[in-house]
Image (spheres, rainbow, N blue to C red):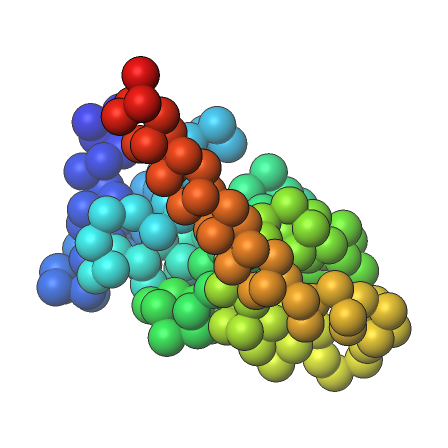
Length: 167
């Protein structure tokens, strides 16, 4: 595990191209159960290199980390996000259930950024237009759901604090 972490640290854009490429080549042999360690590792300087490794894995090997890869699209300014979007785009129709699950199960995802990433870099041109149209209303309201959930959580926290005073 320590060797794995050392290799991941060598992905930094602060390191030489030779060191980064050597780390990428070695990380291609990572066990599937450890692939999640490449998903936005500590330090944004590592993200682009990690995205390169993931891209080289290709589909179907990345199947087990697709949901977490989609989370990378929350902010298209994040290093590596365009690489991740490109590899997700190459998957085609098998990606649809993963996108549906993220939209349904993670209402706290910043939907404007996620939708932009999905629409501009994955869905188009033709692959997913039908799915996008069918789910247009749900994707428009996901921020409202998360705001409501946050509000309800705040109320619950206040209720708990007040109950401490009345006890």
